Length: 305
Image (cartoon, rainbow, N blue to C red; front, side):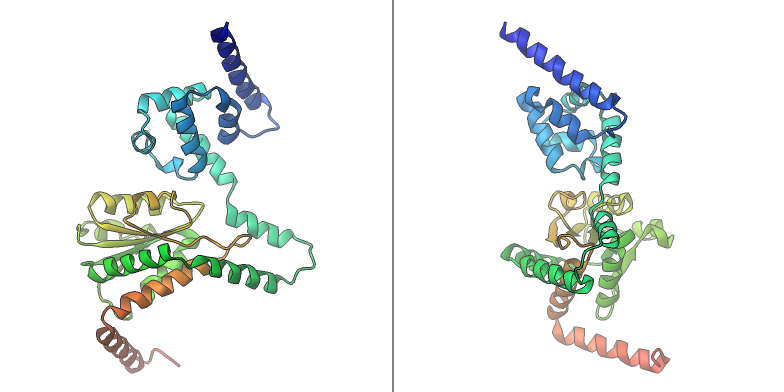
């Protein structure tokens, strides 16, 4: 009798998922489908479901083997799980997760909210207050230790590569520009520059990559991180979550979440500035001498008005 009721509940759970999909008024949502069947999942399936719910933005970037390694669930079990949810397999499930993530992008959602808001709030004052509050919460011993580790990696690397895409690129380019003031071994890696393969052929395990990536995470940045990770290079991630795709492959994570209810990179830029200063301080005299020479060349060239 107990087995009969368990089968009946499982059938009802699957039926609710199917009904959820048939309702055209509701977009297909992997999280809703997992929630609908969660009570009837096995212990192993619940472990898998918990990881998926907590790391939903990383799923599009994880192969079935990588997901299996992180959850200690076999690829075969993962495939069966996705089929029980009504997908043809992990690939289709992964695409559905990608679609869900694309629909729910926090920065763009907050930007739209700011534009459409009819409130009496002073926009500038509100932004300043939220960013200042976020900066106060940014500091911690964990970040302090990670910053020191990152500065050592950058300072001792044969070459330092920096990469990012879309909105995160502003942080990456700032890092590149400022580090070049006193370092001659810094390169910018970007698919948009058209020379990515030329630079990648010279990558070695002695090199370091600083990658910047925020939700919605881009495949371009993830691909570069994956390539250097496979090459044995050290990876430093500036990102918004320890479970972000680049954080999962990083040797050192500089966690700088965006301020709540904003689309600001003030935390990421603060961490970037701290990293630049920390690297420069490793050899103060040399850094200052190179910055002085840079300025002399700029003046000789007539760069400034």
